[in-house]
Length: 179
Length: 179
DNA sequence: GCCAATTCCGACCAAAAGAATAGGATATGA
DNA sequence: TCATATCCTATTCTTTTGGTCGGAATTGGC
Image (spheres, rainbow over the protein chains, first blue to last red):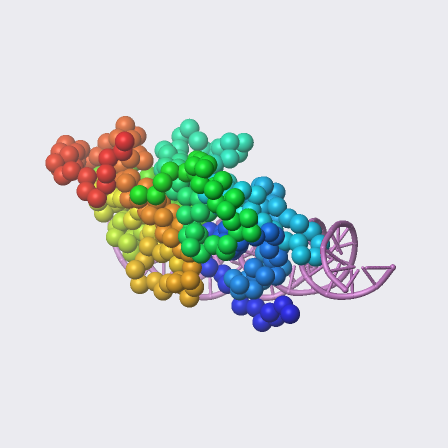
């Protein structure tokens, strides 16, 4: 059942590349966004649609669950679903859950309880890494899952009327509108 | 002469981290900026001041030279120096030379002649990676070497009066001013 | 109560990239 | 001619990446 001929995809295409964790994780979240409101979706199902190794997704989804972005239902007909509507899930949260704190350099981490490097003080370049970090964080925190999944692409919610109205009533939080 | 007890520093501190190539390379450039106008500086000298392996710097500086950011003088009392004053060297150039094109994901590269991934078309998430890339590029291209090395930290130029005046006469190009 | 579909979890593994080291050839000023 | 440089290529070791594997524990449906 599992696709045994696996082409390992290593993609370090230059500077500041995210790993497959970030890539697959985001795609997984996008699939869950499409299905939001339709009950839990199994990883087998999603792995098939996105053509990704199910066993690997299993690992990724743990981080997403621990970050309270998805919730799981065990047993038959179980699976995963978003804990919140897509417009309330900021991409910064997703990427940080998957890949760790945004830190282009050891001396410029998102995470407050992260030691600064020994060179700080006589280091004139730190300032650059901080600016880069802020640029990335800013971009990430200005997008939600809803921005990635056009509502046209979403499956009809089971309780469509209810949910749709409720979602519209609550404006997107923490996210600035796209230009 | 070379410090034989080497502590290899692997630093993947989370998402979007640059490698030591980027880190060391920028520090190297900062040192050259300090010395700008004082003739070539040897790598031995710089490696000592920054406490970095000289042989490794040798490799990095090749990329910088090929990108026409530094020029070399061979033989005794040779070394490297900037090809342009610090205010004319945009950090985007430096990082791209050291680490390759800015591409947070395979489908979102800086480099125009870079194939897009097979999924484009039915891929709704690509747009996010492009925005991240633009955020990074933007930050990088809005800083010059001069922003990293305060003029107070620079060594007095040999032909100080001349150079200083010449530099002031030509406004910084390609770089927007810091807020 | 059994079975199939699930999540859950830890161990394991091969290949790639990262971070150098090693060693020599070539150039050049003193 | 010698010490100091850049130049260049090959090798080495380690860590991370990108998974696989196998087996729990859970749960709905028959």
